[in-house]
Image (cartoon, rainbow, N blue to C red; front, side, top):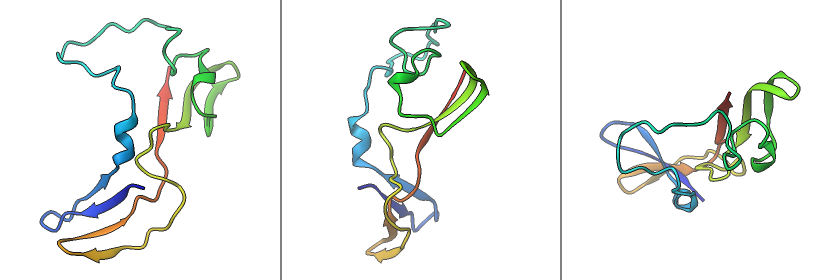
Length: 108
Protein backbone atom coordinates (compact mmCIF):
# COMPACT_ATOMS: atom_id res chain seq x y z
CA UNK A 1 0.00 0.00 0.00
CA UNK A 2 1.21 3.50 -0.74
CA UNK A 3 1.62 6.14 1.91
CA UNK A 4 1.69 9.90 2.19
CA UNK A 5 4.67 11.53 3.91
CA UNK A 6 5.10 15.11 5.01
CA UNK A 7 8.50 16.71 4.49
CA UNK A 8 9.46 18.31 7.83
CA UNK A 9 11.42 21.12 6.18
CA UNK A 10 8.87 22.25 3.56
CA UNK A 11 5.64 20.77 5.00
CA UNK A 12 4.89 19.42 1.49
CA UNK A 13 3.13 16.07 1.26
CA UNK A 14 4.45 13.47 -1.20
CA UNK A 15 3.14 10.07 -2.26
CA UNK A 16 5.39 7.03 -1.79
CA UNK A 17 3.91 4.33 -4.07
CA UNK A 18 5.96 1.22 -4.84
CA UNK A 19 3.03 -0.12 -6.89
CA UNK A 20 3.65 2.60 -9.52
CA UNK A 21 6.81 0.76 -10.62
CA UNK A 22 4.52 -1.80 -12.31
CA UNK A 23 3.19 0.69 -14.87
CA UNK A 24 4.36 0.32 -18.47
CA UNK A 25 7.33 2.31 -19.71
CA UNK A 26 6.29 2.28 -23.36
CA UNK A 27 5.90 6.06 -23.40
CA UNK A 28 9.31 6.79 -21.88
CA UNK A 29 11.44 8.82 -24.28
CA UNK A 30 15.13 9.63 -24.12
CA UNK A 31 14.78 12.79 -26.17
CA UNK A 32 12.58 15.80 -25.66
CA UNK A 33 11.17 16.09 -29.19
CA UNK A 34 7.40 16.02 -29.35
CA UNK A 35 6.24 12.82 -31.05
CA UNK A 36 3.53 12.73 -33.69
CA UNK A 37 0.24 11.33 -32.43
CA UNK A 38 -2.29 10.17 -35.02
CA UNK A 39 -5.97 11.03 -34.56
CA UNK A 40 -6.67 7.39 -33.72
CA UNK A 41 -4.52 4.39 -32.92
CA UNK A 42 -5.72 0.82 -32.33
CA UNK A 43 -3.01 0.38 -29.69
CA UNK A 44 -3.91 3.54 -27.73
CA UNK A 45 -6.18 2.76 -24.74
CA UNK A 46 -7.24 6.42 -24.57
CA UNK A 47 -8.44 6.84 -28.18
CA UNK A 48 -12.18 6.90 -28.93
CA UNK A 49 -13.32 3.40 -29.88
CA UNK A 50 -10.86 1.75 -27.48
CA UNK A 51 -12.90 2.29 -24.32
CA UNK A 52 -12.76 -1.46 -23.62
CA UNK A 53 -9.02 -1.07 -22.95
CA UNK A 54 -9.55 1.12 -19.86
CA UNK A 55 -11.41 0.54 -16.60
CA UNK A 56 -15.09 1.50 -16.66
CA UNK A 57 -15.56 5.27 -16.79
CA UNK A 58 -16.66 7.05 -13.62
CA UNK A 59 -17.87 10.00 -15.71
CA UNK A 60 -18.39 10.68 -19.43
CA UNK A 61 -19.05 14.12 -20.91
CA UNK A 62 -20.39 14.66 -24.42
CA UNK A 63 -22.86 12.87 -26.67
CA UNK A 64 -23.26 9.08 -26.49
CA UNK A 65 -20.63 7.51 -28.73
CA UNK A 66 -18.93 10.89 -29.24
CA UNK A 67 -17.54 11.72 -25.83
CA UNK A 68 -15.34 14.75 -25.26
CA UNK A 69 -14.02 13.82 -21.82
CA UNK A 70 -13.88 10.57 -19.84
CA UNK A 71 -12.74 9.99 -16.25
CA UNK A 72 -11.45 6.48 -15.48
CA UNK A 73 -9.68 4.91 -12.49
CA UNK A 74 -5.91 4.75 -12.95
CA UNK A 75 -4.86 1.11 -13.50
CA UNK A 76 -1.54 1.90 -11.80
CA UNK A 77 -2.90 4.07 -9.00
CA UNK A 78 -0.68 5.78 -6.45
CA UNK A 79 -3.58 5.85 -3.96
CA UNK A 80 -6.25 3.36 -2.94
CA UNK A 81 -9.87 4.18 -2.03
CA UNK A 82 -9.81 1.63 0.82
CA UNK A 83 -8.37 2.74 4.13
CA UNK A 84 -8.35 5.81 6.28
CA UNK A 85 -6.56 9.13 6.48
CA UNK A 86 -5.20 8.80 10.02
CA UNK A 87 -1.86 10.58 10.40
CA UNK A 88 0.97 9.26 12.51
CA UNK A 89 4.22 10.83 13.77
CA UNK A 90 7.10 8.63 12.66
CA UNK A 91 10.75 9.46 13.30
CA UNK A 92 11.55 12.45 11.06
CA UNK A 93 8.21 12.94 9.36
CA UNK A 94 4.45 12.50 9.56
CA UNK A 95 2.92 9.72 7.52
CA UNK A 96 -0.53 8.57 6.52
CA UNK A 97 -1.84 5.61 4.49
CA UNK A 98 -2.09 6.32 0.75
CA UNK A 99 -5.84 6.78 0.93
CA UNK A 100 -7.74 8.48 -1.89
CA UNK A 101 -8.69 8.21 -5.56
CA UNK A 102 -6.28 8.34 -8.51
CA UNK A 103 -8.10 8.93 -11.76
CA UNK A 104 -7.14 9.65 -15.36
CA UNK A 105 -8.92 12.42 -17.26
CA UNK A 106 -9.02 11.67 -21.00
CA UNK A 107 -9.88 14.42 -23.49
CA UNK A 108 -10.42 14.00 -27.22
